[in-house]
Length: 489
Ligand SMILES: Nc1ncnc2c1ncn2[C@@H]1O[C@H](COP(=O)(O)OP(=O)(O)O)[C@@H](O)[C@H]1O
Ligand SMILES: [Mg+2]
Image 1 (tube, rainbow, N blue to C red):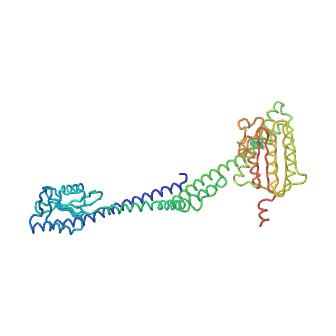
Image 2 (image 1 turned 90 degrees about the vertical axis):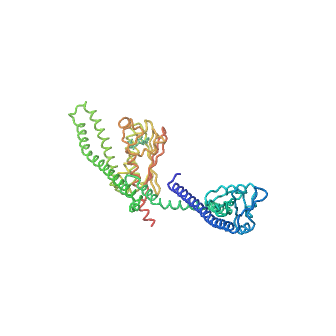
């Protein structure tokens, strides 16, 4: 069973079925019992009557039993027999020699075997009263056996009976009708259970939706709404989750603050260091031996400044404090500028850089500095991850709705499994060797680029084949979404 809903439905159905079954069994048992009880009561009364009758006959007219020539056969006196015949139930009278001295019409119809069984059973009864159920010739008969006192030494017991068939039948009919309605009950229980559990689980479903909406660090300020208000289990769960969210938010905020503050604090000393090293490099008094280490130091300081800038920017993005300064920007000009820088980089690395852009301007509302940073990130990556002899191409195309800048290279490419990860913070394909080495980097460029594209309402896409090269394509809408909405309305 996969969902709680299905499990609840199943258990509900099973529980209801079990309840109905237990109820039915109890009812039919009680019915059976009370049926026999009533019958026994009547038979006992009739038995008392018959016993009284026999005693009265004995007092009035001497011995009741008349012996015949066969010592195995004896019968009651005829007039006594006639009086007993008036009783509508099944009656048998047994004498002290265990002979049946009287049988009503039904008893006389028994086969000798059945009659024998009945006679011996009645004879064996010792107490004043006993109820006996016998299967005689495939008929179940209930008898009340009674010792007869005061009817002379010959007659000792009388039994009055009636068929128990109807009594057995009633509960059986009940069970049969229950089996008939059982499927209906089960279907009803399943449907009800399914609907009920849906109702019961509704708040949980809502909570899941709300939680799913709080998907990243930036929506941690949100809380679970409606569910938290109720005092039931779901409400308690919502409250527990809310306080968890509050704690998470607090630590996220603290973390961001720390990164932002630390990056900020590092900026000034780095600027001072750079100034110092640059001055030392240009100072005539610096010994030539010190120049190389100073160069290396300067490079490290540059890289660190880059890292600190990137961290500060991402911290601001996370805090929601990163703002775009939008103005009309000519994308063609920006791409051309980046192209010139990339060309210089390419010359050093033996990579040929080409540009393909429309002659006229491609105007767009955007943050010029950020767009430049974005294109520059892609272009420097393209040059950096392409070996000597390779090519890099910058292409700018535009339509009335969107502009797109694609940066293509014939470099090392990216493995299919890594395509989704290149935009992750600090992710680098050759992480192990690369903090310095031949392709230094920190792995933040693409995540910043992605943010810039998305903050402009655009997107960034990547297609790549290992060993063959990569193409990063940035698409930026030309009419910002807000403006489009205004035009539409
Ligand atoms: N044009 C490219 N060709 C091959 N791999 C690339 C390219 N651009 C980015 N990558 C891979 O994506 C990783 C992340 O890029 P980026 O975020 O710019 O960080 P960095 O350049 O500092 O390593 C790089 O380390 C590299 O492995
Ligand atoms: Mg980079």
